[in-house]
Length: 177
Image (cartoon, rainbow, N blue to C red):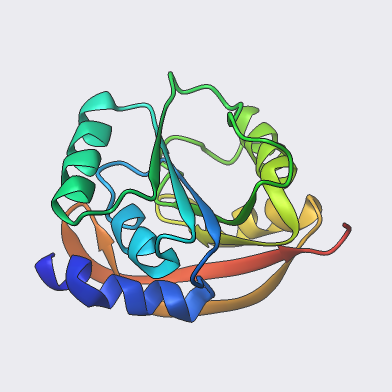
C-alpha cells in the first residue's frame, strides 16, 4: 500500500486525466486511498473535496493529509444523503471509486446520485468510475442514459480494502451539455 500512496496512484490518476489546478470530488473517499494522490496531482492550485459518511475514516484521511503537508483537501462529512454540498459546475473531475457496494443498481438513490454528479460537474467534466461490487455493463448503461459517453477505460492494479488487485476504471464525459 505504501507504493500506492507514494507514486503509483498519482501516475494512475494522471493517466485517467487528472491535472494540476483541477477541482476533484472523491465521493465516498473513505480513508483517502485516492484522495491523497489526487491532492498531490492537482497541487496547491487545485482542490480535492473528500466526501464520506464515516467520520473516523475522514479523521484518518485528514491525519494523512497533514502528515504530507496537503492543505488542498476539503473535508465533507455527510450522513449518507445524496445531495452534494457543492455549487453547480464546481468540479472538473468526479471519482466514484468502490462505492457501489452501497449504491446497488436498482437503488432509487443511484439515479439521484448521477443527477447530482451532473449538477456539480463542469460542462467538460470527467466522471471516473471504478465499478467494484456491481455489474459494470448495467451500471455503464445507466450512466450513459444520463447523457455520459465512455471516453476510455484503464485496466490496472487498483487499491481495494488495503490490497492491490486488478481492476478496470471507466472514464466518461457528458455529451448533452
